Length: 196
Image 1 (cartoon, one colour):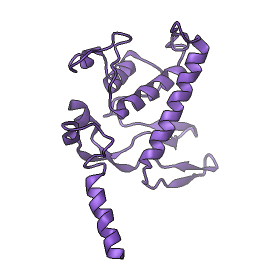
Image 2: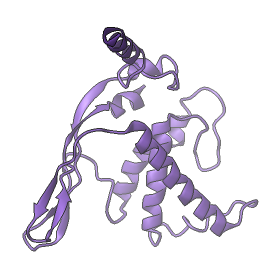
Image 3: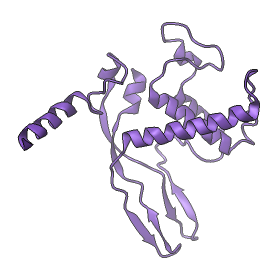
């Protein structure tokens, strides 16, 4: 019985996995774009020599956090897509904001992260809270979108349930444990998927 259970688990995992795709993923040829890679996540919070918290980023990786700049916005535009990219897709493209209707969930999640980033820096993005659609009051629309993005990201994180262990290291300077998040993860190759 144990042998049958192990076999069924192995057989099922070969059909449905991050490496081979799931029945809820986009169909071929998108599945052939799936490649795996090991990535060390930058963004660990450390205590610097002055005793302040500091975000450790990889200088080789485009920056996606911090005070808004044109370079930061360009990096985000590359992640979430734009109209010129949508024009390569056969079919109708929405002219409203340059967005298009069918995207992999990863792109929608990144759109939500980018939206929340802009909300955090609303002085740089003054229209983020006042975008007006005629059928929805502005404030309600904004709060609804924030809640939508938080809920979608929560569900996505839970769905993926990354089990990479995150050690917590005691900081004498701060008198608290700090999560060591600069860990290696096994991930789908985002660039390969976007090239597809």
